[in-house]
Image (cartoon, rainbow, N blue to C red; front, side, top):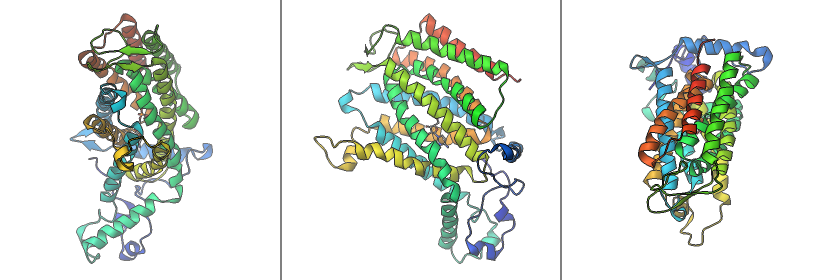
Length: 409
Ligand code: C5P
């Protein structure tokens, strides 16, 4: 796990009266300026200074900067997620499919619980030196105090800011299921790179980032590359019926049943997911870097707000004819592959948050494009995916655009 950058204000200046007052205490560095709300134009300097301070305090893992470790981890996670999620949807006949809404809900519940535990363990009360801790009569009181402080932080007056990315991420996570069920893994991965375009656009508008003409050109090539892949994948197809034993360019499936894919629906879903990804990521970065709250506290807030939109489709879903009760229906057909999908998603959510905190959203986009290569190789080996010349041209254009975008100005 990464190190805490600096000792907390509270752990440096703790007096018994301060501790016993139980006032929620921010987990920010004493060197940071006070938080401003979001990124208003006239207060733009404060978040920039914070960002600068955060860059100076880059934590490491085994001597390697956490920033780069998390970016590479994210690339591998992205490739694994699309492969496992795709397999979990297409390898099973529709009648035996699990509910994506349950998967989205489980994702938020698990991510929120893990973030809550990490936030609690990082609590300033628990980080005090043993001598200072002695004033707590017993361990339960110490933990109870830490938990009370954490709750006060989670339900702070600005917690509502997380409701926007929370709703967007739930929509995105649901769209991902539609997209991956209707597109081959490799096409999904390449098209999903349009996230870079939307993220850059939202970064320019919301974070007022400046892009050089080289970067705009790279984004233009990215769009062209994605377009070429889309044209080849959806050429001549409305609904694509596919078996793994066949050798069409589109699709993958199980040997024992036919999985029907609708590339147009898949591309529609992936395009919408790119918009929510760009907007939610940039908004989360804005909230995270423009305020003093801890990353893990922000994650708990994000998951808490996600529970409402994640629960809605479950509550509204009609009861199946052979219903076995709410919980049994919720987890119907929820087998090992469904749990594997959720586990990889949870892991990815946590790594994404670290990447957004210690690097930025645009770099995140480039890390995930590394996963295209991994997905290609896995698709050829696992799903009998056939590379066509136009696919290679489109994917190479996306990779070149990615490289171009990443060049120093
Ligand atoms: O595709 P993209 O990188 O935008 O996906 C981000 C994923 O990370 C989403 O599934 C979202 O739910 C998750 N996430 C998270 N916690 C954050 C930020 C993102 O779980 N703080």
